Every structure is written in C-alpha cells, then in structure tokens.
Length: 221
Ligand code: 5RP
Image (cartoon, rainbow, N blue to C red; front, side, top):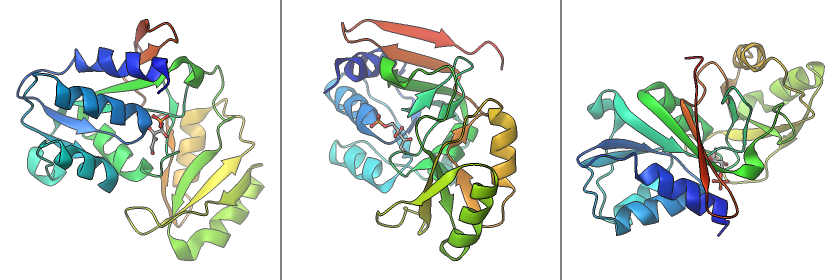
C-alpha cells in the first residue's frame, strides 16, 4: 500500500466522531480508511456507501450501511480522488462510482478528500475524465465530446452500479472546471461527469511518502 494513502486515511480517521453518520466513498485509499475505522475504537452509528463494493466492505466489518434517503444531511463524507487542483476541484470516477459519490458529496456538510501526493496537479485533465452515460446515448455523447476537443474511450468494464457505461475522456485541458462540468452535464444521456468543480472538496488531506500529511482547507466555499 502506498504510504501516502495510508497516512491520509489515518489523518481522516481523526476527524471522525463517535456516533457519527458517515458518507464513505470508493477506492483503494478509502479501503484503507475502512480497515482503520474497523480496527479503531470509534463506534460510528452508520455509513452511507458510494458503491456496492464499499457497502459490502463496511458490512463485512460490522458497520451498518444506511440508505441516504433515511439519513438526511451527512455531517462528513470521506472519499478519495484521481486528481485535485489547488482549488480542491477534483477528477473522480476512476473506480466507476462517480454518480453515487457526487450525490453523497452534495448531501454532506463536509467533504474530506484523502489522497497521496501524486494526485495533486495544477490543471486537471491528465487523468482521463470519466463520464457515466446512459447506454443508448454512448455514441451520441462520444461525438459531442470529440466536438469539445477530447478523445472518449469506452471503458471495458462491467456496467456501473446504476446500470450505465463509462466514457473515459482523454485530452481535456481543464482550465475552467465549473464551466466544463456544466457543459458536459447538459448533454442528453450524461448521468454524471467525474468533475467535482461546482461542489469541490472542503478539505484535502495529502499523504506523503514519509507518512506526513498536509491538510488543506478550501477557503473559497
Ligand atoms: C472512485 C473514485 C476514487 O476516489 C478514485 O478513483 C481514487 O481511487 P484510489 O483511492 O484507489 O486512488 O473516484 O470512483
């Protein structure tokens, strides 16, 4: 396991209160967080999971998985990311869970993103931007993405937890993330864009190889 991911996960655990209702994301960094949470003496009251995989993992550790429709606003959401820029705007969805991740981020008071230092970039877009698309709209959306200057690639993977497909879009140089997110969201057939720009992270915890962490707060929200 990347020592930076471990360090970031451990720092996030310190932010979790006993009895908290947590949003829990998806991916290898979050998996470390779940292991640490389960091994700790913290007793959370339950978690809302951003994927079936995370729900299974939480359940296996005896943590109650709750339906977001029953919880109201969550105090804290912890998740990883594929890239973060200095404004804490993110590319997410490498693990295919972007839609539920965006819903939980929207429904949470505080979104704490945990990453290793390799995820920090000045300009988003070197990591291919994942877009979840209704299957019948695949070709149409792909053509529209080409018009916007990027190169969409169909992800050869099982359908998402929502029964859709993912287009990984190469070559976007994302200098205006809020605008691009809105433009892509407006395409018919797009379910979710893996750009978290209009709702960025509130806190980014960056883990370094030596086990140290940096906690960056978003001052623009
Ligand atoms: C899943 C995600 C993950 O947060 C992202 O892919 C980072 O994963 P990892 O922690 O394995 O590097 O967005 O959809």
